[in-house]
Image 1 (cartoon, helix red, strand yellow):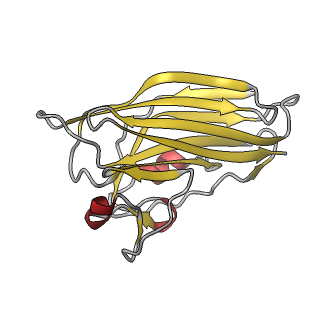
Image 2 (cartoon, rainbow, N blue to C red):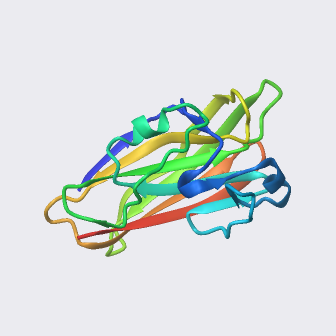
Length: 188
């Protein structure tokens, strides 16, 4: 199994989330995700919010995910979601967040736990209390931001086929809120 941890600094800020979802100021009062038209979207195991803090995790097969992310803020990136992935095809796990609590210096502190589990339930990667974002927030804090690290995965011969699960526990340490997020893909 090819697992790679890459640290990514959130150079790209977007007002719109993946698949046309957006976190609007009005949504924060209700701690809910909204679509591009401002209508509430049902949260899922991969997209949650609590007390104004929002997070999402997604698995994409786009090897150009970084180029898609690093575009002007008004550009809505579109990612190919990993569903059924052949051996050797790369999958990238992206963790996103919006509206972190800021300290008096305008800095955020986002931590996360990351776990990747094989179809047999074997934990193949576990990182606890990772620094996912620490520092100043430039621009609108309601913009969606990419956190680090990004996980790269490709199934090698001998890796079990089936559903691979990725769990991310995303924490806004200043707000004292955590969001348990999960996504998966099928290795075939």
